[in-house]
Amino acid sequence: MSAIRIRRAYEAPGADDGERVLIDRIWPRGLSKEKAAIDRWMKELSPSTGLRKWYGHDPERFDAFRRRYRDELMDNEAALAELVALCRKGAVTLVFAARDESRSNAAVLKELLDERLR
Image (cartoon, rainbow, N blue to C red; front, side, top):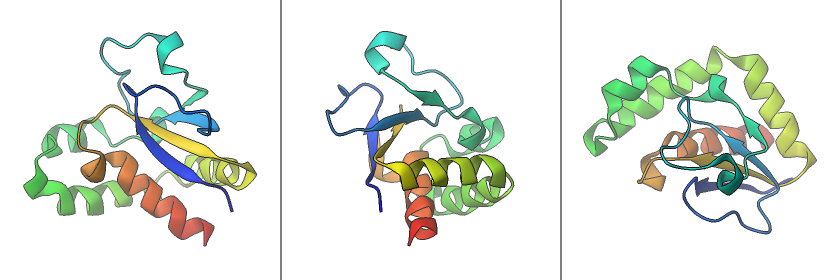
């Protein structure tokens, strides 16, 4: 089984990151493509604009965000299957811009990928 990591886009890439997949709909503000070192940008696995704006990274809304985002991910089975296949090949780092790692879309997506890979 591969290692799935999550890392903020503003952190330096790690030597053990493997494939770096940006999972935000919007490119991280102020970050050059070179510095980000992104291998793939899977916008289709990011929360919808409506959900992202509703959530607004409000910790009080995280549980509801988590449920709604997982529902959205289920509607994009092809992209999810593509990411699962990538994870089966080796290390993958989910890259995101939010400040709160534990309440980010990356944390939710990693949880779902870990479930699928068990």
